[in-house]
Image (cartoon, rainbow, N blue to C red; front, top):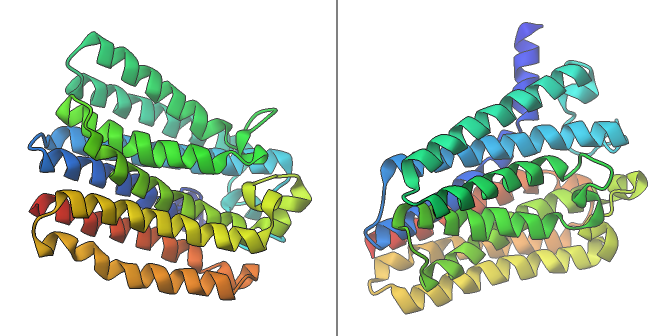
Length: 301
């Protein structure tokens, strides 16, 4: 029973989504390395903080969906611990509080190590608080923004612009125009992961009144939207590479492009929820792999 409960807590943390947090930190740190500003301790603390915030979001997602009755036995994705009765509602709340506290401690350590001015301390402390609030209020509260179709925008900002840009700034202590295309690339790939999740759950979300972007535009256009996200990510990477890379081996990320095309074709041809179920883990892995190989190109350059 104890082993089963540990497994349920592990599943509730949703390890398949953690590549989202890892990818943006890897890319931001590679940018810092590219500009000769890499700081290993800052990168490590940023990685820990981002991962904990992702777990906060995942715990809060289950917590909020349980309150609103969104996660039922009709769920296409894997049943969580609270759905199976292995984890109680009270236990999940305590788990959410503990992992939130851990993310705050990690975030404060990151600020202490990385920030050099009081302006930076205040700015990143506020961003940290905002990130925690955003992680929780996605599905928790009277008007969770995830139920209003704003999840895509939030993911693009936190896993793209802030994830990559913030990681770069904390190591370089300056803003560079070169960070925006990689940040957008990472953001579009992260939104693609969320989009697969929303495509898979569209019918259940519709019944529960969870008006994700896919519920609003429909599964058909959601598949087209998915292709656009992947195309935009690829374009951002290619435009950056053409302007900043000088050696052929920095373009190794292009070997991932056929995999993105293959994934996009599958999504266009298979619109049923059960068929899309394995695509969530695949998209998360592709996003991480693309970011890693792109980051290696940055380091080689």
